[in-house]
Length: 204
Ligand SMILES: [Zn+2]
Image 1 (tube, rainbow, N blue to C red):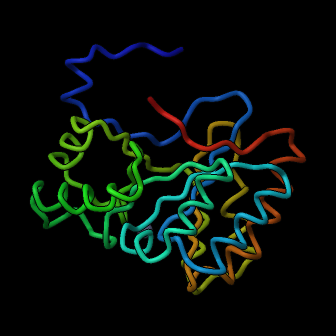
Image 2 (cartoon, rainbow, N blue to C red; image 1 turned 180 degrees about the vertical axis):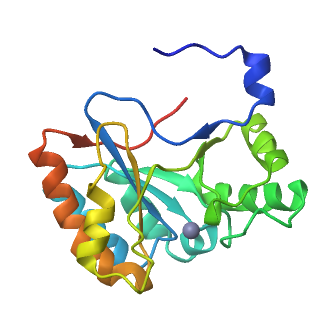
């Protein structure tokens, strides 16, 4: 059941999203790109199933590779803001953090935000919510970034608890490619075998 939150409360309460209740959709997300070759490879994998995802891009990378941002958008995926330069919220003033995110948003034009490292202060979260952003966290980490695990473990991390409404984190970066490239195609196979679909995150 969805209980509408009064607007005044919504303005004061940070909007942290850990999962998105939905009867048939899984939300795959890719952080830290776009990255040449790797982002395109991911788009190709998603296209096998007409799966849609959400790309939490770093503003600096988006500036360097605007063609990749256009590709993500034109293929029906969602874009999210992941700060301009992967800034950790802790230890930064609200003003500095918001300015950094605003810079990234000049190119990304999105109301979805994911804090790098999940590190954000309550004050920063409130400011972002007031500025109209939804703060998207996750309930499944593939841990593709962990160099001590292999692709099989990454696949198990991504799929052991996956179900409708899950928000799953992968990365589109060079250092995560080995694990992610093993896990992603198999994760897609499993999701679609179970009759689920992958949708982009879309929030008003
Ligand atoms: Zn990140």
